[in-house]
Structures are given as structure tokens and as C-alpha cells.
Image: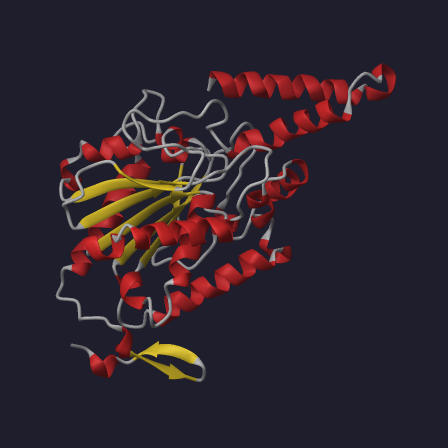
Length: 337
């Protein structure tokens, strides 16, 4: 937070300079751009600053990776997916230095779960992969690591843009050749995910070469988000009687450095329950201070709700249970085994 405050004060000072630009004429375009970028991008993340490898083994944030934090012998897996400009360690770490994944490792309610994280490159200014490319790469990593074979139940906890990445992975699995993998995903939790985009991302995309910001522009003028949301709604309808994956959504109610990033309107997507409001800002909504924090207890309840549902003698799902109807693949309930 100290770094964030310093950057914010810097941005304010630069804006004061901009206001008297005609008189001073000493502010270069580069400095204006930097000041604007800090002011616009700072509220979108709590992780601006140095990124380093986590001692807990989460891995480097500078490349796409899948990292398992606990022993991988358990059949249930929880994966954390950070957001834009985020970090696989710092995104989840609260003011006391304890991260949400570490908190889960200490929680007896999750003793049957393997805890892991996924990460990808998301720089402040530089050009890098867009959401589509990130999702393609991470899905390939999941397949190459045999995640869908090792684990019978998979759960995603995603923050901000991480939810869009996760959603893109799941809709890619919603086809006959991949549907068995999709059914192993029992629930996805979208926490402050801009399913309908965000105004702040529109402005930020003018200041940064990172294409992820452009991918998150407001959905009314963003064909990428429109297509992704349409595919997600198709996935929810295609579940039919099979129930999985379950979808749960939460959103922030407090501003981040004076700006609300993902309100209920921007978080709107197809969920299995009403969106859950959390009295936190965009940064701290995924930094629970304890196991009694609202977002933590809500997440724990949703995961256990899904895992209990999964143990109620589910049918065997396979690709041959799907048939084409009017060009769409639909589940054939007469072929349960």
C-alpha cells in the first residue's frame, strides 16, 4: 500500500502540473502519459510494484504457469486465477502478509483439497498476450499437466480479468470432444469479474500497449466480450440436467482510490445464485483478513455446496451422450449410464 500511495501522490502532482501546462510548458508528453496511466491504472490493481517469486512456490508472474501449492494426491483441486496487472502471490495477500491460498491450506474445511494457482504475463505498459491467447495457453498447460485426469473435481477462484480468462477456458471445453473435461469443473467463482467490461479499462487502453485492457472495454462496443458472454450463456443452457460447472458471482461495493472498478452492473453474467455484494474495494475483495471474512465464508460455502452436489451419485458423462440438434450439440438424457 505504501507504493500505491506514493504512485497516487505522484499522479496527483502530475495532474496539477497538467492544469497549468500552458503557463509552465515544461511537461513532456511522456510525463503526461505516465501520470495519466498511473492515475487510471492504479485503482485496477493492488499489485503495482516489484513482482518476485513467492517463497511458497507460486512461481514467476512473468510467464504462464500452473503451480500446485499442496500435495497433488488429492482428487479435488482449487485453482486461483489473478487479474490484470496482478500477481499470483500479491493479489491474494492481506495486510498481515497471509494469502488466501495459504489461509485455505490452514482451514480444516479444505483438507481434502489440493490448492494451486495459475499465472500469466500482465505488464503495466508493454505489449503482451491478450485474453484469448492467455486462455489458449493456460488450457494447454492444464491438459499437458493431465489436470483433467488427475482430479475428479476442479474449482476456479478468479479475480477481475482472471474470471474472463477462466470463462474463455471453460467455453472452449463446451464441445463434444472436450465435454468430459468440462464436467470435472464443479464450480467457478467470479469475484469482481468485469463480464460487461469496465469504463476504466477503456481509458487505460489508450495509455498502455497491453491488449488485455482493450479486451475489457465496455461490452456494448466490445465484440470480444459480447462473444464470450454469448458462449458462456450457451454453456449454462447446455448443462441441461447435468448441473456442472456451477457459476457463482461476487462484486465489490467500495471504491478503490476513489473509483469503483467492477460494480454489479459490470459484473452481470449468468450465475446460479444472485450476485453476492462484498463490502470491499477491487483490491481487497480477494484479500480476506481471516477465515470469517464475508468473501471467504461465501467461497467456502459455495465450494462445499458444489462438492456435496457432485457426490450425490452423478451420472456418467461422455461425448456420445451429446447429439446435434439444429446445428447445436445438446445432452441426450436417454443415454445416462
